[in-house]
Amino acid sequence: MRSELQSLQKILNEQNKALRWDAVAASQRHALCSDIQEARQKQRELRVVARDLESEIRTKHRICTDMSLKLRGSQGCRSPPRRGIEKDPCQGVVDEVATLDARVRQLRETRDRVHEQDRRERAEAARRIRELQQAMKRKELEALNKEESAEVKLYRIHMKSFLFVTVLFIMALATAGSNGGSGGNGGDGGSNGGGSGGDGGSGGDGRVLFFA
Image (cartoon, rainbow, N blue to C red; front, top):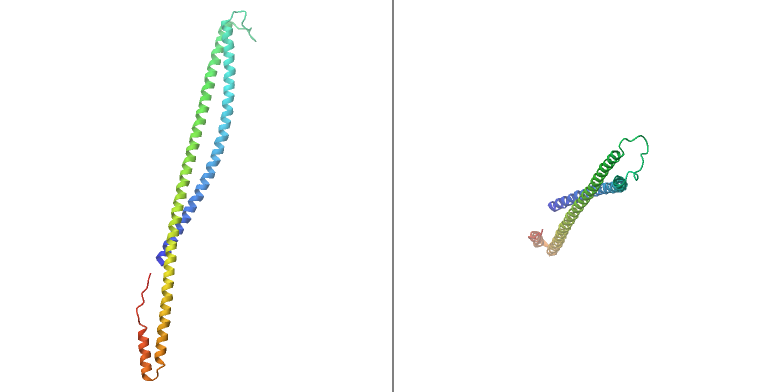
């Protein structure tokens, strides 16, 4: 009986440990949700930056196209310098076009890096969510198995307790019956009654089977 109670106590301790693990998993899930919200906020910010970069790229590309058309056009079609004295107008326009081309390439590289970072963060968040879901499923399965094992052991303990109480009840009935028989023999009187009473007392020394 004591060993069964100790086993049940061990199972309860394991269930408490599983509950603590569930609490830790819930805390990790809350932290992961916060990380996901921050990642989504950062993702929105990156998208805004990417849209701005794309708009700037289109603007620079349009400027480059206009300047290229000016270079291909006649001298009279070219726009006059805005300020200062320009020694070689063609060379100035070429330099400005090259600068704008370099700026466009830089903006495109920045946009590609932003998109790549966004993809990596999405993949990392999805991976962490999958790992957390798998861990939670494992914990739930372990808790369910432990709960079923505890219920089976508790049922066995109850059955053994019921059998133990039943045996005690049968022993009490047998003892009461033997005491009644010895009292009846003592009513015959004399020394024979005393002897029979002694026999009745010895008759109570029967063997009782104990079921555990």
